[in-house]
Amino acid sequence: MSTHSAMVEARGIHKSFGSLDVLKGVDLEVRAGEVTVVLGPSGSGKSTLLRTLNHLEKVDSGTVRVNGELVGYRRSGNRLHELRERDILKQRTQIGFVFQNFHLFPHLTVLENLVEAPVAALRRPRKDAVAGARALLDRVGLADKADAYPRTLSGGQQQRVAIARALALEPKLLLFDEPTSALDPELVGEVLDVIKDLAHRGTTMIVVTHEIGFAREVADTVVFMDGGRIVEQGPPGQVLDHPRHARTKSFLSKVL
Ligand code: ADP
Ligand code: MG
Image (cartoon, rainbow, N blue to C red; front, side, top):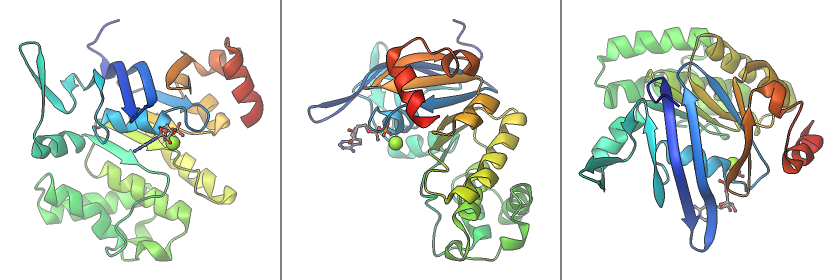
């Protein structure tokens, strides 16, 4: 496959925790502008895979490239050397990460949550960062919450702030790890709507979720993981409606 349009190119990813093999040789390719939804049972390695993509987890073997750039390492000859912390942090600014539990800074207002990273990491002038933050809050429907503290918001609002905060760094890639799993059911829709809007704007995203309807509507590719491997992947109409593998069928019969 051509590597040129690949935003994410993970090859042969292995990761163990002690004697537990969590990723057993994962290859993943995500083209620019596409949405990949990752499904799979609890413990199958979905979060670990996402975390290797921005070097929150170091791989034991294999390589990850994002936008053509090796993540976490530099190559000299045929050896890989781990990047210095500062360079890892710099790479991470290109990859937005949205967690299940929002992870907002509790001591900062909503606006300050969005302003902090562009000023500190990208050295944006504060005035520009504030203007950018206000525009993003408007986009996720929270312009009126700029001066509120996270704890005063609903879970759905907090997650929309977290998404806006990720966008404030203008990442090339957005990773979502079960972004609606911690929400009351009536708040899931407002968060999925924001993610759908991003999809329509051509944002490259990998979304771990159990929301099959969302996957059907938004995903270009659905990836099913089990036991540290990608068991099956393809367009939603194939993987969700005509799964080939017994494990995919069995999983879907439980979540649908
Ligand atoms: P999923 O997101 O699909 O539920 P995870 O990637 O979180 O799966 O976890 C896969 C397996 O790896 C689980 O058995 C989990 O307990 C284990 N695991 C994940 N992170 C760690 C860690 N930091 N230390 C030890 N075990 C871990
Ligand atoms: Mg997980």
